[in-house]
Length: 326
Image (cartoon, rainbow, N blue to C red; front, side, top):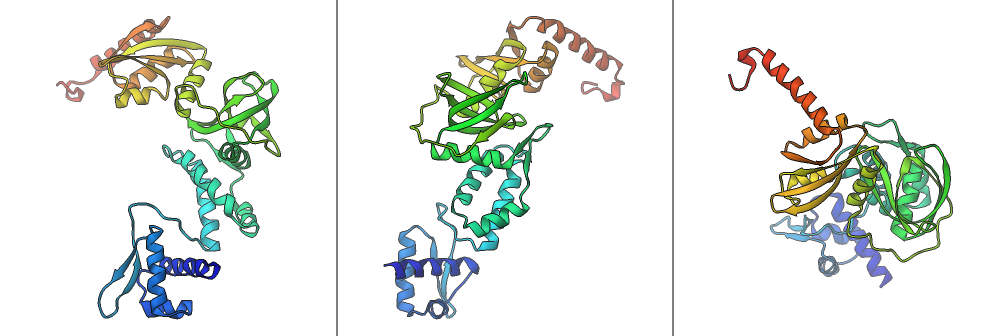
């Protein structure tokens, strides 16, 4: 059985190195008969590897695309290149790529032999720079937290708050999330008996991690929505506006990256949002490109009136040929 499994892995590796193989070529490489090659190909197909038969005089076998992604075999150089590329992708700023890259990197690092891990460490970036931000996240910190989330192990760390104060935390890590230009950890705080959101660039983990825990369910939110809601409540200025769109619309989902969206009816929803100042909020609302009503936002109307007057002056001063309605 062990010999057969090893031969299947060798056969799979060969099929991945070039497009077409004849049955005799594969038999010669594996030191078996063409009949054994046919049986091994059938075993790979049973494992959902899409091995296609190529007809003709020079016919043989070809590994093609399938309905699902099967496990891939990487040689040493390919594994190192993939690990380094995933670390770079984690800080690329491409929507939804950062978190996905970290998950893939954790899977790859878990099975990397020590000799390859040393090669990756020798050339990897020491920090993940978050786009449009002066903060940087240490790659080792990100990996440690991600591993604790994956393996359901408690995490101890020193945390630097927004006021500069340092506290020691013991948490059950739930998920890593990128929001805006930063990384956040969503976790159950064991000492405070409540869910908390932590900026990863302010975390200094203590190792080793552990012990293991049974994951809790995040209350009525996915991790990204929880982070958006938590971060929104941290802003000095808080406001609520009514958007003239359904909570299920694409614009409302975009608004949820700024604050918490609350459904009202099929044509409107409430957006609970925070910002540094009312003036800053006017630009966020303008970027949504949707009509809204002010529900509870002290001073927002004044800033909206000011920016409207500025835009109106710009329109009035614009030459006729430069106006869209000219």
